Picture 1 (tube, rainbow, N blue to C red):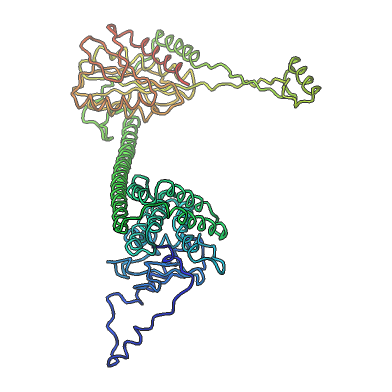
Picture 2: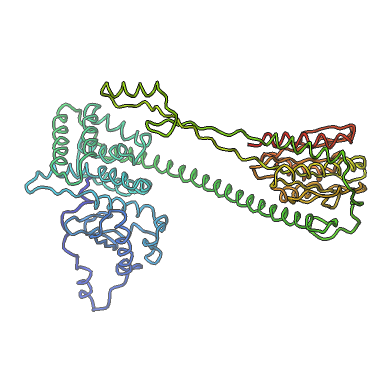
Length: 600
């Protein structure tokens, strides 16, 4: 049992027996196997293409045929620059089913690919050559240590190949254990090097190799096993070209075994069976862990796919809602004053708007007063930023200047910075966005006059405060009617309306106000005012609460104004009960001032 099966110094003569056998009969062509050797030539060529990425070398040839000249499942010939590969490793796949040139195709034959990765590790890192006249036993030990060394070096370059190197251990190690080249304690030592050496480079897990570790400790003793562990650990650090150091480690290996052999008890007669059984336990544990890892990875992939689908569906739903909100806003605010259905079609009944009037002197005064309050709330102090420097410009600080002179006189590097520069910057004044949704069902008739006055006052004050400020008012029942539109111009007249509707469509009204005023977008003082008693059906309430929560999450203040004690509270809103409807304009004005003051 040795590494010499995987690294060959030269190629044996080609076997021509198959060609000569045809002349032993009547000269008929020999029966072709199910997958002829010629059919595997393409597979070998494609493996050669993939070997470039695995080994970093472009001077290697890969031959793939049923059976190998070396007798091993695969072998690397350094002198010929060739890797030979047994096509039987791909069983039960046939040549036309194997396409290594396609990345990912190796998932169909992980065992074969693991062996190929192992040979690629040899091709990349088994670069040292044995000197002429070297002791064959020492060379054999060096090749034994080479097995785990090259896999550890390969894992450093390509850590994702660990899964395939684990499968190669099952394919390559077990046949060698069943037909060992060593006997007695050397057999146990070689098993330790192949199994525990792979453990120490990260190919196998410590828990998986416990059976082999315990048996090798019983056969070799704790001291010898620790010595051998130190030798293969040191060999793992050996450079690829350093034959001298590698052979020195191999000599230490042989000397440690020779020195310990006389004092060790005779190994059991069935040592080979015991070692094979321990390695079978290791392989079973590896298979169980790999299956568990695959199941966990599959579960993680499924969870990620499910989450991705949910996110994609959520994005699609959000895009659909935005398109629907945009369509609703266009139909409401571009309707020419008419009442519309949420889909943009004209409503089949008359508008709640009953006319318009000139604002009263009290309303004009209230608008001017609110405009001043909004400007005061929106005012931001200039920000100041002070920086120091060793040179002008800036105000000279004599204390730091003297400190700098003292540092220079003392021969140290001056660190004091005597000049102070103050930079003042104006903070932008945030605009205002106020959306008002007023319920025009029959129970809200008392609020019509005050809300119409409040809508005009807020719109007028916002236009006087900042040209970028905008307000809009929508009256809603089953249908939607724009009382004021989100323009930069102040309305000249107060729009009056009546409340005689039957049901409620607050959800679409909020969508129109959100899209028309950008209530979900930061950077402005945003306020949504809902004037309603909220006497809704469960479905109407759910549609409204969904929009309210989305706006609240985006940072928009939501105020609900009610007029009687029987009113319900919409979750997510700040409830304000006004027994006197005439106080609605002042309440809305105060809420707008607070909203713009909180803007950052």
